Structure formats: C-alpha cells, structure tokens
Image 1 (cartoon, one colour):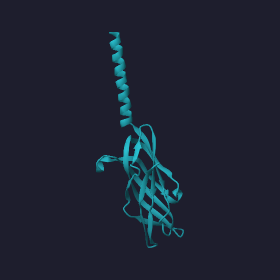
Image 2 (tube, rainbow, N blue to C red; image 1 turned 45 degrees about the horizontal axis):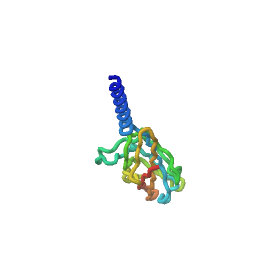
Image 3 (cartoon, helix red, strand yellow; image 1 turned 180 degrees about the vertical axis):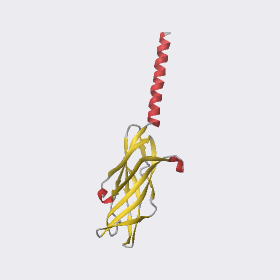
Image 4 (cartoon, rainbow, N blue to C red; image 1 turned 30 degrees about the vertical axis):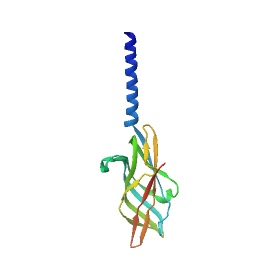
Length: 174
C-alpha cells in the first residue's frame, strides 16, 4: 500500500508541476519595452520634430480585429525625434501577457516642428498609427524582457502659414 501511495503522490506532484509550468508560460506575463528611432529623411525645412504620443496598444497574432488589441503600456509623453536619429531610445515599458503579437498601435496627438529657429504647431495627419511588426511579429515570453523598436519616419510639409506632419512607421523586433 505504501508503494501505491508514494507513486500516487509523485504522480500528482508531477502533474501539478507540469500544470503550473504550462500555466506560467501560456498565461504568465513578460515585459515589453518599446523603443523609438527616426532616420530624418523627409523633415523638409524642419530642423527639429517633437511628437506627443499616447495610447500604445499591441495586437495579439491570430486574434480577430478589435478583440486582439491589448494596452501594451500606459504611456503618454513627448519625444524630440532629433534625439533618436539613427539610435533607438526606450520610451516606455510594461507587463504584457505571454504570446505572439503582430501589430502595434499608438496615437500621435500633437506635433511641433522647428523651422528657422521658430517652433510651429503642426497638424497631424491621421494620428492613429497601426504599424505591422516585421519578421513575423514578436514573441513575449513569461518572465522575459522583449524589445520592440518603432522606426518612425514622419514627413513634414507646408509653410509658415501651416505645417503638417504625416507620420509613418515600421516596427522591428529588437
């Protein structure tokens, strides 16, 4: 009888450990770090571009349309794109459920451009960016830190009578 009891305890312990590991890796969370960089290709007459971003969300691969969007990090901030020319800088990080993700979305709510030493508010064209993640997306693993680089390439158009910022971007697993 002792032999069967011991085997039953070992068997149940093994099932609990395997179940716990499965739950951890399938439903646990990792940390997503979002970085931004910018090659200044189409700033036109602007020497500086400042953007105000918010509402950074990420889409779970395989999920349907709007149901797959999760808040990646609660972020809201300004970034001077001159500070991230050809170099990435972390703009936010936060916990995210383990899994594969294929799109990142964020809003550009305001923009300021510097032309001939003067700052001008720029109208943001379609400020909500849905950006595909290259290389088949990213995988966030439980207990791990995953980096995602948003390579933003805005175009500045207009004159002193009114500037426009046309944002575009791609996201690259870091």
